[in-house]
Length: 240
Image 1 (cartoon, rainbow, N blue to C red):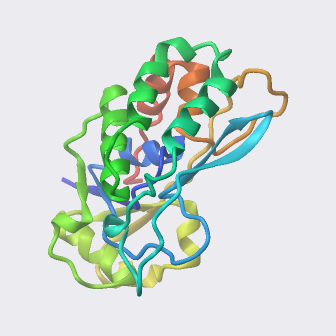
Image 2 (tube, rainbow, N blue to C red; image 1 turned 30 degrees about the vertical axis):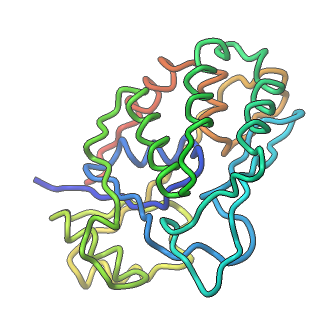
């Protein structure tokens, strides 16, 4: 049987395309042990939401008072700052009039209030909770740190796919800029691009649709059942 692996860093309240990767793979590996960038923003501690009529960043502060480099699973949020409280207020202010706010706010608030300080642990726990909330199989989700794979760059992705006895690697559209596609063929692994088409749905009090926002936006505007149906109905024959 042909098996499909997708690999992605543990994002902070990811967008719909992240969960599309999960439903279209047999094993989804959370790349929790790669280097966290020393400067600039990162999807591991920020995401865009619908704020004041546009897509704006919501960022969780992180502790950067360290020497050298750290991996994502060695990084921590700066909990000396009330970022969870600020996040909750932002959510209430901008989504309380959304059609499915009342249906989903308690669940989302519980995720934001997760007391874990470690970035990888916090994000992974919330990704698993969302996947379970949407009725998607959680056992397919693994962590890269669980595998005894020490290679780097594209070779590391290939070795993780091999460790799962898989034949297909499902990657996102932005991967072509940094990975060596020819290495997959040399290792007898078929490379497939996700080619995700973002669904258009009604965003409360907005004219032009804003793509790429957190799945929180979809849950608040479409509701749990519709998001679940949309993801499951978009399972594709990746083998073709």
